[in-house]
Image 1 (cartoon, rainbow, N blue to C red):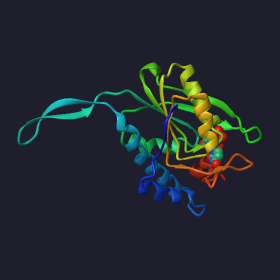
Image 2 (image 1 turned 135 degrees about the horizontal axis):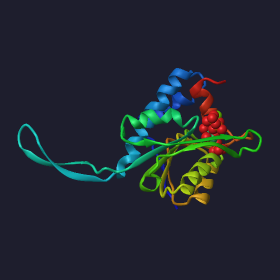
Image 3 (image 1 turned 90 degrees about the horizontal axis):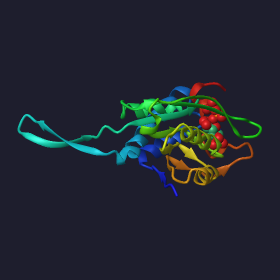
Image 4 (image 1 turned 45 degrees about the horizontal axis):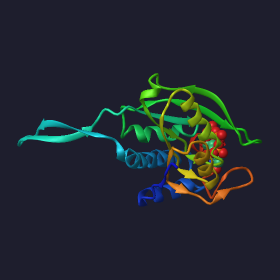
Length: 209
Ligand SMILES: O=P(O)(O)OC[C@H]1O[C@H](OP(=O)(O)OP(=O)(O)O)[C@H](O)[C@@H]1O
Ligand SMILES: O=c1cc[nH]c(=O)[nH]1
Ligand SMILES: [Mg+2]
């Protein structure tokens, strides 16, 4: 079964509290999501392989380590996943970015796919699927399936806030996928919103409500 990592570094917890606060406006919300995504990327990339290179310092020759040309792909789920991309790209600027467009039908809570564009070398890349919210898990599970159907083999999932229901669905449908979170919340409400959560991530990021 895939692991669930809750990245509860004090900086992440502090910023996430402000993200959750209903008084936090669009500009600050966007900046904080960007910052937390960068802090989380630090931990998610912990297993990147290194290789040795020989360099010359001002003092001597030395054998040191650099990241060994791993092919990474970030896949934000539109729209809200977009808010986390730049914060990660600041740390991993060479990553390619694919997009999966999904919205959750407000009545059925089921995901509806409207767009997919991935890097051409899907089979050779390790992917991180990104969405701030893992609620019922339907959107993330569908995005992961979309990647697998196109040949992706190694996939991680990165979210800010999850409900237990979402974790269960990913474990059921994609048991090998590791999940990285900033917080695991209590439950879903009757409308499928995470409690306490942070509200509608897309609307808060883009100011559409
Ligand atoms: O786990 P689930 O129950 O599927 O819910 C989570 C999804 O809901 C939100 O997207 P939304 O449908 O609001 O689209 P948006 O990002 O365009 O606002 C959120 O960004 C996730 O993609
Ligand atoms: O709490 C939730 C659940 C789904 N989508 C969101 O944006 N927020
Ligand atoms: Mg939304």
